[in-house]
Image 1: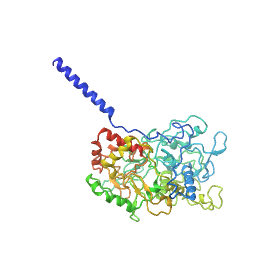
Image 2: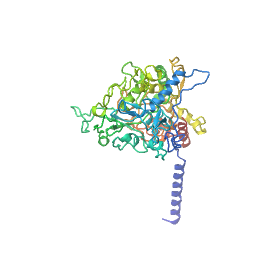
Image 3: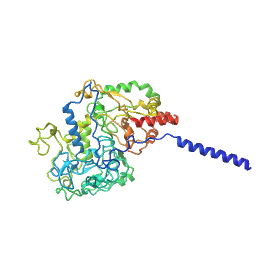
Image 4: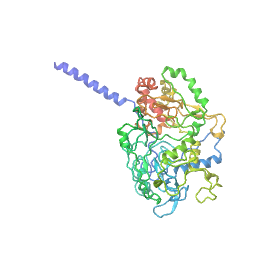
Length: 533
């Protein structure tokens, strides 16, 4: 090789490397969580700073507003959703339903200074559970949001000691609170997503997958709670509880687990107020455009009345009332009128004389435990107050001052075909029992339909009429302030979440191909737009 030729090849190689580096530097990038990580109750915030409450639905003063009674129920619902649960029916550290905590420095009850709470003020925690208060899994970027990080040592924070670095509350706070003796499974990472686990197939007492007479594994699909109350303090009625956790690591090795992360609860009352005919009208109006992209989509429907179900990752729940009752029983083990049977009935771990169902409409003749039938705010059970709170919580609000790139990204988002599933706006019913919910635009960015997302996202779980690879179009309002994405929280990068929509058999393949053919600046505009929501 001549020296001149060597120099030419070297120069061309240098140019190629330089261009590659420039391309990398100019590549589109998720700008990150808008507003940062806010739901820490310390650490990343000023120590001891309270997380703001869920936003009450607000409209223009000239229009209908939330009534005084609705406001009272809404704020009572916030108190109930924040309660920290104890296991027996009379061993809360302070009066049931009280918004007070006991100061560990002087032993006196005082206003709760931080979140998460460190003093139990409610009863009913089940022998098996995933969480011990609603907001533990719904606090990013505000109470009622999606899952995020919490300060792991609220007692120390209350004592004025330094807060630990906020982390996944399933890593240390919930599994070990009050002396619980739980082993944290490998999929609950310190700075990873809050995950509940479902088993794809049923297993026997040894953790082996059960098969039918033909050798086929028998489907399960149910939630298997992470934690037990074994070793918990403050309850003298269950000293001999010996429950053990499922062998999660064996199920991981058998590829028999499917994960779900918490969805936000903001704006659910508005979504519930959308009529079926509105959903179907949008589906019909976009039929030809969707067909051009190979997008189908169908509603999940109630097996009882045939109407469209719309809540949960697979739209498996009909109403927020159903969701509230199920969450109390499945996630916290608290029985109620909708789910009156405990998921774990071991007598040695459920407390002495603990009534079932535990959380029901109050009939007490006085209000000594905030359970008087004559007090309108205290008649409803906790789980019912929880659904009232969700009903009157406003939807997530977009960035009021989006960048020029974000504004352009909205048009690119529509032109690329993303809006064919992520319907920007629907309208609530023209007449509602609550005037503040009626005839309102809901900027949810979802068609509330099921779509087959292909083998890459399929979780092997069927719920209602939703198959193993089908998921409801996740509403995108508020996505700019979420930390983790997709049903299992596999990524915190919006670009990776978009690309994960492309996989064999996915209805989104043509749309993602369209996105991938965009200029880098246009891809960036889409990411900026999403983070502005």
